[in-house]
Length: 237
Ligand SMILES: NC(=O)c1ccc[n+]([C@@H]2O[C@H](COP(=O)([O-])OP(=O)(O)OC[C@H]3O[C@@H](n4cnc5c(N)ncnc54)[C@H](OP(=O)(O)O)[C@@H]3O)[C@@H](O)[C@H]2O)c1
Image 1 (cartoon, rainbow, N blue to C red):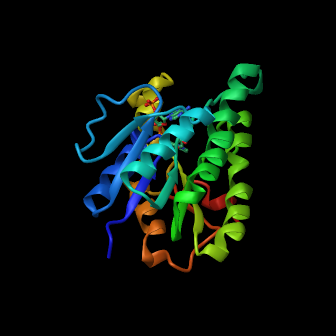
Image 2 (image 1 turned 90 degrees about the horizontal axis):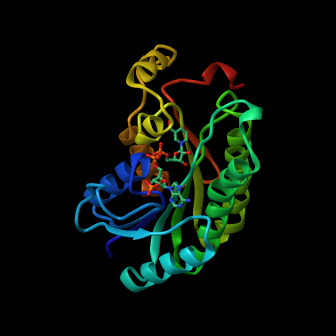
Image 3 (image 1 turned 60 degrees about the vertical axis):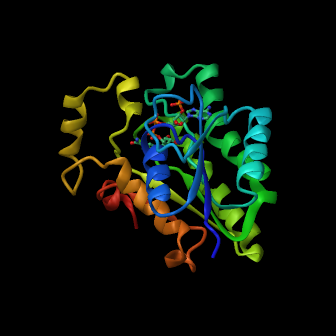
């Protein structure tokens, strides 16, 4: 069997980085994208790092050229590049709103569109969703758009045997929080509201992505795997 290949967008930090490491450890050839740079991520040397803005269609073309040249085909596309902007409705200006939708929705849509010719029949796509109501209305709307997108694509790509799923992280301890000014004390206090009693790690989500991409999930498509330590369970039917 040939070595499986994976593209992880937003793979230079947090959830994407942990997933790239895990996939590499499990024998995948892995390429990641990042927005600001290709240095200082600490990924293994064998993981290819490409600077690309998910909002730029020209950058996405460049990423696919790199995938074509290095891998030829893709077995896993992990659409994880994303931004969050918590806060009340008054705090979101037009630029912030556009950034949320351009990065999370437009970025995921066009990355997948451009990856389609490279995606192996029988391959797998995983979206990172998460961020439900309570985090902020604009980010909830942008992330919320991803679930019907994911389910539509699951139906559209099923004839090719391509499975399309999502992971929805709860509170996962990544550098995203410190960049938003969240302190360690705040994160630890939030942990008390998590039924399993701790915040999640990027590895918790990486394991879910690796599962969805694997043959163990061969009959799962159009689904959203929530990795939240139980947050939100009471609100589900
Ligand atoms: N952490 C959580 O609790 C949580 C909860 C729910 C959902 N999520 C979602 O999970 C995903 C990963 O978040 P994280 O917590 O791991 O955040 P993170 O540590 O900040 O990592 C975000 C990654 O996305 C990249 N990125 C950001 N904007 C991009 C753009 N325009 N084009 C390409 N790459 C871009 C970043 O690249 P640079 O580092 O170069 O900027 C980085 O590699 C996001 O979609 C986030 O919304 C996270």
